[in-house]
Length: 262
Figure 1 (cartoon, rainbow, N blue to C red):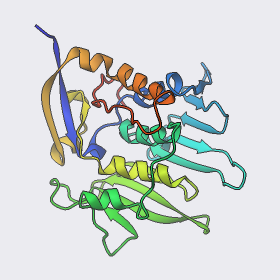
Figure 2 (cartoon, helix red, strand yellow):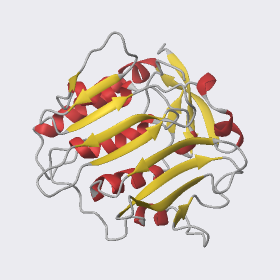
Figure 3 (spheres, rainbow, N blue to C red):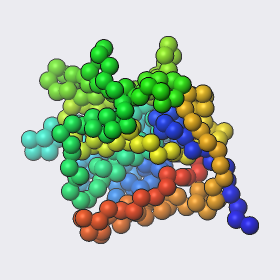
Figure 4 (tube, rainbow, N blue to C red):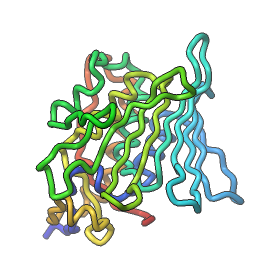
């Protein structure tokens, strides 16, 4: 008899807990050749791209609301440096969507003229009181829990703040995208927010919001699927280096075993 493990399939995905950071860091290191800076005296992760231009850092902060994840890119020719940051409780699948797009060796997918197109496609709406979009009404009991706001960075370039929050409570998580970030990375982030495919968590790791304001269906999953999901993801991303440009890497189910709890 095949052994199975109970997993909760969570929607909307922005209400899931942070998840296992290795879902984002391991493929960068093993599949994309990013080097790791070891510092046994500091509880942080630093990964640097092969060309030394991009860096991902995880800096655990004791201060609530401070970003833990940061993706930064140096100035290249006439292109200004840019950064994207994420709070500790940002679902790692959303962060990984950005790093996957950043490390894709092929030509970036065409970016729609309307960057909000993925959000419009799943009925996010534009309230009158802010420049941006809010998650759809009627999707769950907590309407409008996620929002994307257009902001001005340093008075010259427009960026975005992404926030998931319950009314009258501190934000569950927040991301900041500066206005110099490449459009295809912004598009990847918005696609990840709009993605209605459930993501998995161990049932006992679900935050309260996922069960009271979203949907968390618990069902058994073969233990082998859970154990090898990260390895399959890493292999698929490594194959992008040799796959024909027109051939997309096969999609894999986002199922994995959580290794840490925040």
